[in-house]
Image (tube, rainbow, N blue to C red):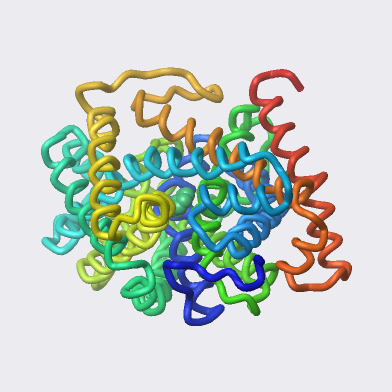
Length: 458
Ligand code: PHE
């Protein structure tokens, strides 16, 4: 019976540990690198508003569904979906959700690791004082030089992939916990320092207005899809990472409370990053719609001007790498857990194979910034890093929302009321009814409407 099932991979030592691990998965490049740059590309305020609505109406209910499925199944997402479908007398086809997640995980880690490699490269640039006196122009050329050099990118990508694989091989319980416990609060403090600097630029108000004053003429149907995709991406939803972490969650922990805490922290970090970056953009006459290089072209200017900038900058990029690391780990975990369960492999072997596949796929992204670059139009914007942009749109805006939709539908319609009442542990109270209503009606309708809107049907 579900009640007695335990995970063969272990369990978090407490609810707090789960919150930290899941927050570690959620907070990453998505918050600090991606949120500002796609907000900038999609005109600011209105985009942010849609994103926030998606976090609340779609993200939190799906996170609850994903965690509850994971904790009930207590296995890798593929086997969890198969087991629960069987127990609820549903078709075994539901395990496709787990398979889709594994594929999405490979695709995402392949570009995620390349971007994390940029952050690694910037640790050394920061430490060697290269940001001192940097201007908008010189920061721009520093960035273009890096991404135009595939060999250098390959080296950093390789280092990040090895770091990630090593932790996954050792098991997520050891090591990861400490990293999240001390380093995430430090990252948070440094973001506050940056926001403090942003206040001195003279463009703080303009930055805030850009972020929070909705101008609906600036956003397209494609932009709405991107905002929803970002909500999934930033919360690590729809591919099984959160399901996997949920499978290690002790039975007593409240799923609703933890989900709200994780989503709240994640959103806070993204908004702080935006509040730090846009004032710098406006104060230095830069473009908000600069693209994937945005933070790498703006933050060095800030660090280059502030007192103690070398230290702060070095620390900031180290912590950004750590944040990316704790997210990267969760991208690989579902595939590795499946290899351990179904093939009887040792974790080391599973992690190595998975890491090598993700690493090889990374070459696509590396080349998208130089030799293989091409442009296409999406959401009314020119995307100039062809295959990378396509991978990003395919995973964040299509695969994750589809995966999340399937999880909400499974938990809301295909699991019995008894199972979900039991797992959410809040009895049959109002809060349970609210979750079930949202998971059954609001979430699926919202996701489907956004899709239909993006392809021009509604
Ligand atoms: N949430 C992570 C971030 O914001 C990325 C991620 C997506 C991690 C999907 C796991 C699964 O950086």
